Amino acid sequence: MTALRGRARLVGDDVNTDSIISSARKRESLDPAVLRQFLFEHVDPAFAASVQPGDILVAGRNFGCGSAMEVAVTTVLGAGIPAVIARSFSRTYYRNAINNGLLPLVCDTGGIRDGDILISDDIGAIRNEFTGETLRPEPLPPIMRAILGAGGLVPYMRQNGDFKL
Amino acid sequence: MAGRTISEKILARKSGLDARAGNLVVCKVDCALGTDGSVPMALDYFKAMGGESVRDPARLVFALDHYVPPTSPQTIELHRVMRDFAKRFGITLHDAGEGIGHQLIVETGRALPGGLVVGADSHAVTYGALNCFATGIGSSDLAAIMLCGRTWLRVPHSIRVVLTGQLPSGVYPKDVALALAGRLGADGAAYQALEFAGPGVATLALEDRLVLSNLAVEMGAKTGIFPADGETVAYLEGRTGQTFEPVAPDPDARYSQTVEIALDALTPQVALPHLVDQVVALEDAAGTPVQMVYLGTCTGGRLRDFHQARAVLEAGGGVAPGVQLVVTPASREIRDAMSADGTLDALIGFGATVVEPGCGSCCGTCGVIPGDGVSVISTANRNFKGRMGNAKASIYLASPAACAAAATRGAVTDPRKVSR
Image 1 (cartoon, rainbow over the protein chains, first blue to last red):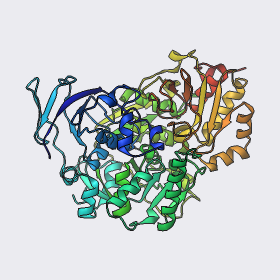
Image 2 (cartoon, chains in turn green, brown):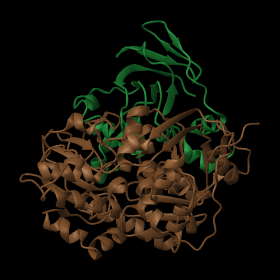
Image 3 (cartoon, one colour):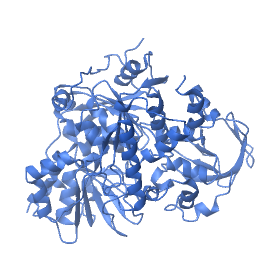
Image 4 (spheres, rainbow over the protein chains, first blue to last red):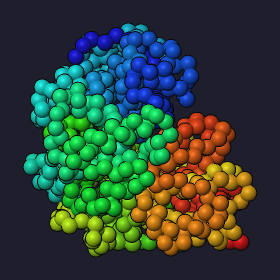
């Protein structure tokens, strides 16, 4: 995995995919470069413009609940956000994240404050540069690591043509 | 070695492995659904994966249900691309107006006991009512299935939901599902399966079970699966020519927890804005003004739902002034049945706006949207802020009868108390 360093952006518990990107928006475009301007538009209209490349979303429980729409992942990636750290994910969001190369990390996020700088050398540990605290996310099973390692499901399928456990 | 749950048995059958909770398996899927909400992206992924032909088109179903009718050049184009692709590869496509994909999977006998059906839409969990392991996936996973016919799954732990007794008059399966969501919470069943059991199951019609399975995902569940019985077999008669092998759990199967729901003791429930697990007894929200009432969706848009709503509307003397009633049958089969038995005319007589079968107003992609500041009471499954296409509206979720009761008074009302 590539090393990450970014600002923590706190988004809370039970963030649903409709609030990440409104399903009405995907009627007109599926292009992440277009959709990124509507990221979290109903939660915080200023959010999309404030995102800096490398920012990391930090959530509580059940991130990405609701609709399985994949634009909720590609829009986050399109905004330049490479990873989401959450106490737990909705399973469809988790799958979609892995399939698109958005790093989903599961750990206790309670000690992270908005704006903290987080560093991850690989998926083994995340260090909070401000507090010095190190978090150890749950390890990913091999098939998920393989898909992420390939860069997502598209390159994985191009290489393998099928799933391998 | 402990016995196995329904989920473990089906995933063992489909993977050829001794699938146990926590294991990862690769399974051949019996059927995969894609909608106009997910297929356009899936086709992009499929091309990017180098896809040139579809592995097993007979196992795929496309449904145009999210943009019905299409109202922009972009959505018209998405439909055209899907029709062309389906025709080229011989994939069954249900065109706009035929209904919600999930309802069509059920009606056309695609979801069978003991089977594995996935859908690129979170409410694919609905088919669990037919003793089928059914779960939602994204567009990229659908593309991979188009390419290789298989998908990977983590075998879930299961929560056993034991139903006892029988629902009292005025209380419906939606109330059971909301009560369960209130108890478990929006992620209380995350990564897990709900497996329904107990003597109460036999008291529920197949249409009732679909409501419970449909709402499983609102508790984070991977699937919400019922045992198969005579009701299941009777529903499938005439809908499939295929044989099937129902799956029952072993008596010593291991569950992560057991939740018991005494159906007799339940009262009408309502989920408050803006979360599905913000559930209270309806009487505690009684009197809350509503200006829009929505009857439809893959949760509450079936014939039985409209019959229950009609009865309450008739008992209450129709729709109160200032209330907008919107009706979207979940499929054409349902709308035709409503037309044949007078339900459709009765609802139109009450002033209902009737929208073409499809996802309708549920997710704000088509149909009627609520205005700013409007409170909606709906038979749907989600009440997230902005869900129906306007973040300045508030959505309450309740049974079809409770929604109809609210329509008669312009406020949240106990359906058991409605009379002229």
